[in-house]
Amino acid sequence: MRTSRTATATATATTALALCAGLTLTLAPAAGAATPAPQAPAAVTASSAAAASSTGVLKLGSRGAEVRQWQALLNRIFRAGAVAGRTIAEDGVYGPGTARATRTVQAHLRLTQDGVVGDRTRRAVSGLGFATGVGGTTPSSDAHDADRRLRSGMRGADVKKWQGTINIAVRLGRFDHPRLAQDGEFGPGTRRATIALQKQLKVTADGIVGPTTREAAGWLLEG
Image (cartoon, rainbow, N blue to C red; front, side, top):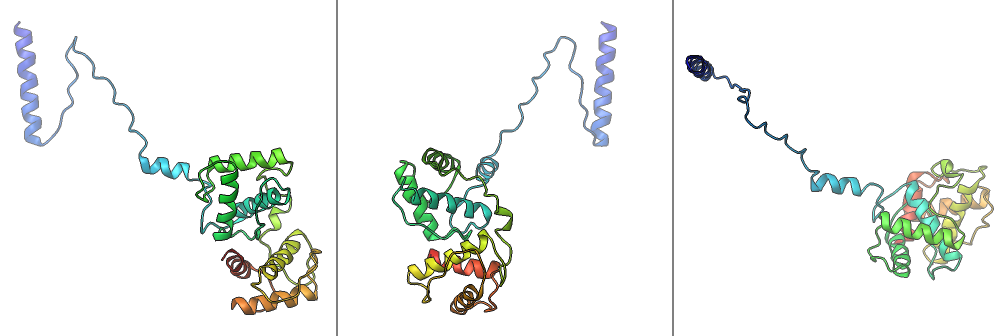
């Protein structure tokens, strides 16, 4: 009993001294007392969850290779006749035209028609592409050339796509120029058409297709 009183007095004195010194003590639980359960880790906040789930979402204003791959998939589906829709420019700019094409396919698949490409839309449309035989959103073998600057003398699939972009502008009545042969060769005709289009778009008219020209042409077609 005396030992117990002595221990209690010592603890009380120690606590008093600590309080005077402005310290905080963490006392060990008494023998036989229940040990507090450890606190659960903090829950993931709504904002962090939303940020994680939005990774890779394509919508108005998105740009880049992933947008181009999506546009290419939509075009393959339209050309195969799996969905009745109008082909769009594969320019890497997610404008109103790409949003409309996305809503068209979403309606066909009975998805929410918001024109936004999230995981559900991407999986469903890729599945349709594979079922149709035109493939999914896997990058093409020439994806590494998608952003190179195009100029006279160059050849390749990206040149052919650029020629197709010019032809779509002509077909839509947004660029007054003869249609080009989509042969993948950046010859004099393609250079002349590029310069004429650059003048219309009010960008540097040098006949070289760089990011500024691509983006301006993309918005012309998407409008």
